[in-house]
Amino acid sequence: MAKNSTKKAKFKPVEFEIKKSRFKKIIENQLKTISQEPGTVLNGVQFKTDGNILTLASTDGNTLLKSEIVLETPQPKHEIVLSGLYLSKTKIFNSYENGRKSSFSLFDTLVITLYEDHATIEDKLNKIKYNIPGFSSDVPFPKYDNLIPDITKEPYTRIGFNTKFLERFSNISNGRTKEGVLSVNKNNPLACFVITAENQEDFVKSTALIMPRELRE
Image (cartoon, rainbow, N blue to C red; front, top):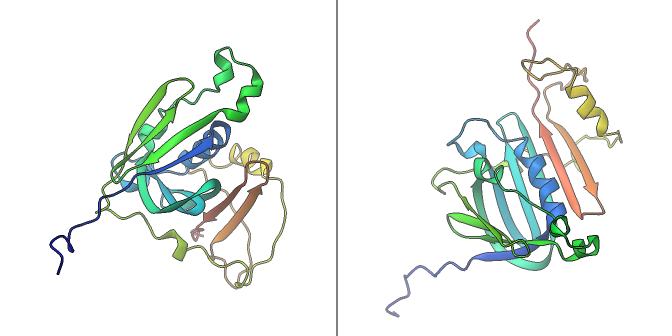
């Protein structure tokens, strides 16, 4: 047997580039779905790479948002939950805001590097680099894939709606609980609600999972 056969292989950081406008839009949405309790894994955003797909997921325990982003280069499998508190403090500036022409937006990218216990988000054009701590892998992130039903096989029907309506609806919902009332089929009223959306411009597919609860009479 070789001397180092049981030695753990050295971890190689996962590095990729992403347009600032895409990342800013996506991370802002993900941060709206984290728990407000600092120090818990639900206060973070999970980053997961697998081939050409980067998946971001966040949940507050009642709602879930998953965003799948197409990367230009394939990446190895890796996942880490990054601090939502530190992610919310990152300031992402377009390079042309500092005097460059808008045509530079095509090259306006961030370099994101995922390590075993943290990540860095680097804006090379503006010479800004953020270090984002991660949560310990000893505290697992919820296995959300087991909760999202296969809407191609389950008895779901596809409908289209204006997502701007949800934003307007939130303004008139219960100010304390942020809940509304939804009337559904009595046969299975507590089945989860699944909302999907695809942004062809940014090559992003988002899946939102909402777990309803029974209201007291």
